Image 1 (cartoon, protein in one colour):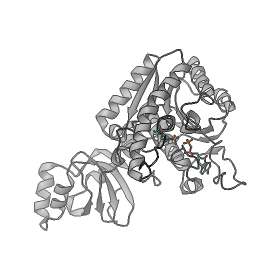
Image 2: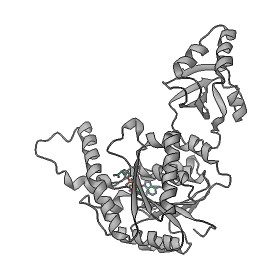
Image 3: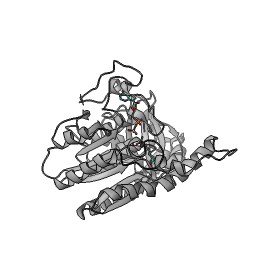
Image 4: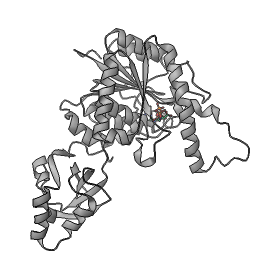
Length: 380
Ligand SMILES: Nc1ncnc2c1ncn2[C@@H]1O[C@H](COP(=O)(O)OP(=O)(O)O)[C@@H](O)[C@H]1O
Ligand SMILES: N[C@@H](CCC(=O)OP(=O)(O)O)C(=O)O
């Protein structure tokens, strides 16, 4: 955290720190976190908070009524949305109490982040708030989101926010000291990894799920977040948010947990957004021997090289180009809807198929292609 010139950090705070007992918000751990934010700002470090905890904070407003049907999975989802609505205001009020500067709430869904215009608008809003010394506090809009539109966990959300905000550091405050080589709640001999320079399958294999009542995603989503952030040139720390010492260490330039080093060859902003924020709406399968090692080659893909079109997508949606041996080749914005592309690809007469692409243009355009060779782990 000693980089120059302008530093910008995103701090992600997990539910266990906000409402550890699901009995409303607690100041127990938040005071040290708030002081860290105040001290960062005093040092001229622009700070953005991604705060989980609306569901945990709102839970106490919804005692289970005798004989109620709140135990079915559908009822649980409805209940959580209501908890999030009630808990979000309580959480914002709690954060506000710690600061003598203004805060601002941004609630978003994956639907907002994957739409380029809305993504750019979120980015501008964050920059404007920072320019006016207002602390942006972000969370997923759990109340309105559906399965198709949600990010689902705030670890990944915080990495998307860090990339959108051009942050140089992401700090994920958890209920544990960092990434261990195996889940320490299950293995007493687990060892803490102070630094990870390369995120590969072996690192993912170390990560298990959450053991707590309030956490979402466990270590896996934190590694996904670190992978997203790192490929945008952002250093990512996982630290223990229960310990005040974690924050003192960060402020004095020491690593109190696990540091995932930023990539030395970060992706440019638009390519990062396409690779890590947008999800593919469908797939186009091409023969395994097609050479797709550059955006130019992908853009030259012709309809008679398409073996199969999967899913329903509209022109302008993002698709995954995959070879028929399963290899993920690239993510790209399709210039065709799935139905039109299937229709063209099914034409027996290659000249007729070519006449479509001649008049309507290539299946994908060179400027909207992100090659996936650098990101083999991410399936989203
Ligand atoms: N290899 C690992 N190293 C550390 N924690 C792990 C590991 N595998 C699984 N975990 C679990 O991940 C938890 C942290 O994630 P989570 O419960 O989602 O909390 P948060 O609210 O901070 O997001 C740890 O408390 C631990 O139970
Ligand atoms: N958006 C949800 C939190 C989701 C989440 O990722 O929680 P956590 O694992 O505690 O960071 C909420 O506000 O309750």
